[in-house]
Image 1 (tube, rainbow, N blue to C red):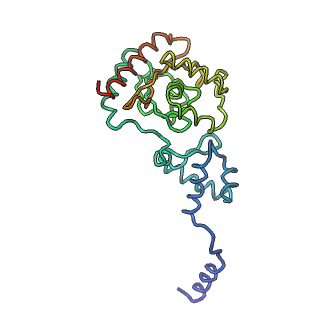
Image 2 (cartoon, rainbow, N blue to C red):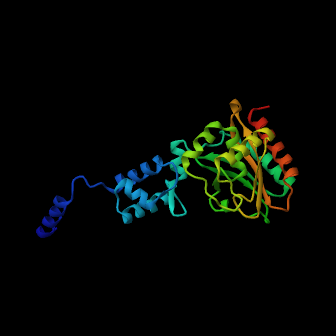
Image 3 (cartoon, rainbow, N blue to C red):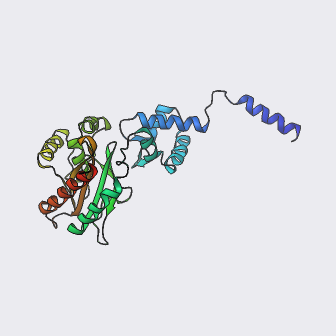
Length: 263
């Protein structure tokens, strides 16, 4: 290397601030900010909390999203599925449960001919870990990433009703988003629904998450009698009666609970 070039390189190194963080440190700062937040964080908020320029933060977020360490929701960001699972935010299914659960989901689909979901809690959302459907499945907002908010989905309400900690932590994630004209956005109104869910063992969502889609869900209980999952069926609103659908869903949830407990 020419002497002049070496001298220029040394000068650049001397001029660079010793405390300037590298990309790894900047990425860690963003992940810490996302993990500490109680809800979705905008790019501007991340820049204020980390002190990073917008262009730098946006570039790093792109990498984090591609590696599932961060996730974009509208114009804001949340911890990604990989980061959430590493931090224990996403509750996995009981190990080995798929073999015992899937036959009941298939039977439920055969009985209803509607979209069947198995969901677990993931922070302020439900994550659909199994789905069974036919060619004429009902379309939902969650079809893209298999996630949906707790407060306006049947599966989410079934989990909230029987998991006191999940319900206790819910307000910390921020105000409820209104997704349709029927979305419940009041915590008091949601609590009234959850009390009814506990009495009936069934939760419903009538076009609260997606226009034209109704859903009914029931909780699944695992070892120790704790709710661990929820089974739900989604159908076209005003076409499929939720009463008979609910009977099938509750029966499937009870059968799965018994299978998980080895009864």
